[in-house]
Image (cartoon, rainbow, N blue to C red; front, top):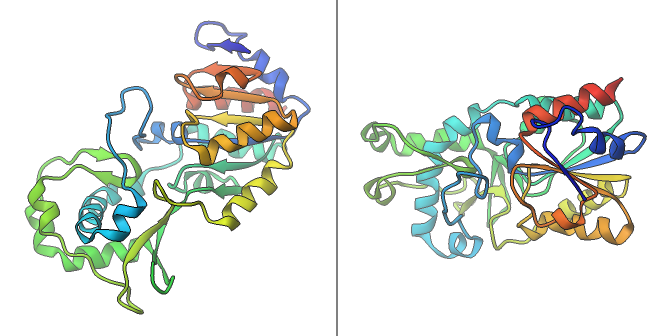
Length: 283
């Protein structure tokens, strides 16, 4: 495996360019794609250790749901205001140029779509919608946000000061704020509302996995962009690529679970590297 750093050598991207030229790439995108848009990640350099919400806890515990939605109600405004960065835009340009067939993303922020990418499989869902666990009714997250804030108007007025942003639209709150928050039910059946994303400990829906495998089947190269590949739902594509003889390229800051399997690894920020790839390959 060639490990290169573009900041140290102007020719450092050549091994990755050689891997991509004349081949169809499918991108496996992770949280590193969105950190430059101001969205924190769980495992990147400088990330604070924190335990994400577990599916079983959310389903079983009303207190856990109250805690989750209180934090999300505050974090949503900044999360939803995030905009695509240069890396997102470059991936859309590479798709337009026919270099990238599509993106399998582990992110839930919708920024690939916002940047203009057309073929995007959101493997872990999207925070742009919520759904009822009883009747499966879906509702736009913005509409749900309005209901949350309407039910907690006095609560919102009391919550002052700077709030620390956390991954996946979450935010750090004082204990009183999580204890006094009220969560509405489904407008159809009164059931429990959950974001339309895959929590830790929850299975990825079969149809989402099938869509991802269908896109993967078009790959001559698998390009990992900004993922440590710690979670199996993404790492499975690495194992299949290795099994099928599909070469792997990686762009990431820090180690990944596939470094030893990669043909080329580039260390550096996606917002710098992807635009340089797009410039070199679109011609």
